[in-house]
Length: 117
Image 1 (tube, one colour):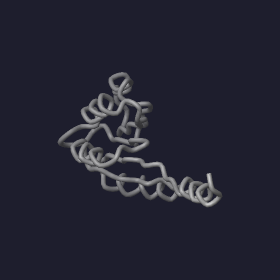
Image 2 (tube, one colour):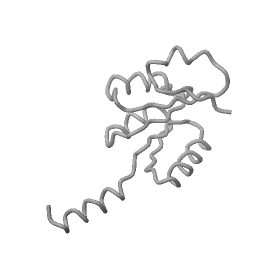
Image 3 (cartoon, helix red, strand yellow):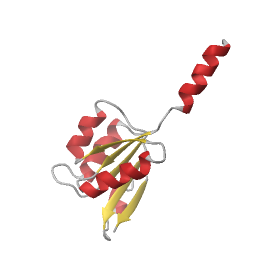
Image 4 (cartoon, one colour):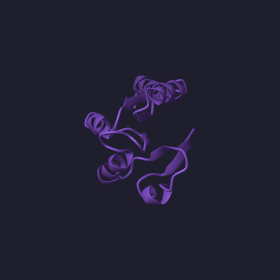
């Protein structure tokens, strides 16, 4: 490997950003999470519901998905079910407003569940 190629590879790796997909129908969550995450060097994309997120997955598979569970059109439960079948190696964090007995129901669909609010 030439010295120039090694330097170019090192520069390319230092510019690498992990890609995160944030799926939430709440506008403030779709604005706040990307602001926090991109400020820490992540490339963040957003989707308003499960259908929008599946469309985003057609173009690029993220390194992490953060998804709300309660959304219109296609819920987070439905979306994460599809994600688990199609992309079983992509880690998922689920977000849920309030206390709900959803942890056992989605335990196999995501790595972590965090309660919002």
